[in-house]
Length: 379
Ligand SMILES: [Mg+2]
Image (cartoon, rainbow, N blue to C red; front, side, top):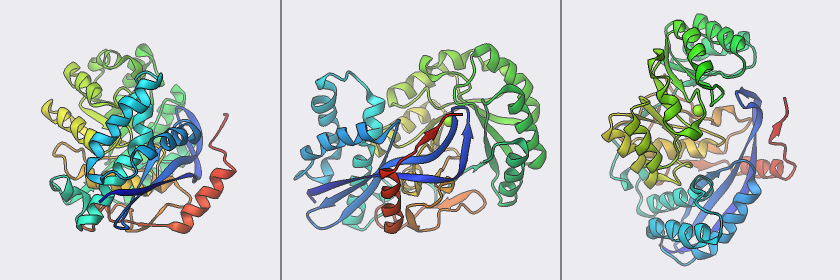
């Protein structure tokens, strides 16, 4: 199965409503749709996550793609990292693994879809088989004010989500009001918070003291990730279990974080690791350290939900409250299956590849939106 062509389509997928978090207000997800076409006419589909803008990622993809044409989809491991060594790292950009990973992840992931479709098996079987038949997701509480967030939390709890997830790090008193309102609206759910690196150590200690009375199951990345495990380690006595997100992208960073014993879970997306192989390596390192792995969601569509569901199903130490983002979109790019969790869980597809049908009309509209883009606004 040789690669005949790799198509890249830049897309801007608008959110249904403004998305409020510690980093401001976001209004859309920029992604690059990746389609790997083989000489047998099979098309493997994935997407690359984008940050901060599409154009530099497209430039790297367009630089890389000619080196993949004519090669076998079974040589993904070698092709991706040969390009990293000779095409990316060697040409003066140092070791920007994170940017490289998010850019090239769509190519790596699309090749798995092509392999699965080519041999008539779901990607989880190609990767050695699923260890579960469904994957769990948290209810992602949306809104601006405590009242709006509490109202959505009550809806999500009524939908059967056993765990809810709320963004904090906006301002201290507002955060406390939000968490109190959500806890009052959903008194029996497991509650997780994410401050997206908004606090320094002292402020994080103060906020954890104020927030822990609301029975917080996990606090995600309250302090900047750039320092690795050190800042998280200093919060160990605060009485709330911690997880690492921005601190960790690469298997090597997972190793360092696990060795530090700073966190109970690592939140990691398949784009951050440059696809399935390195995500599973990262999960295996965490498993050896008795640390859970969570599927991270960032700006992405239901395509990534389908991908992560298949890959996540293959690792034993996957958490049961993972992140999806497609539901924030005004229009998703997956036509079928339904990606709405039932009581917080999505079944693992048995169809070939990642098992989804692309919403081609939605892709065309998202491409139009990219051409007249607005990805963020100042607050
Ligand atoms: Mg996070």
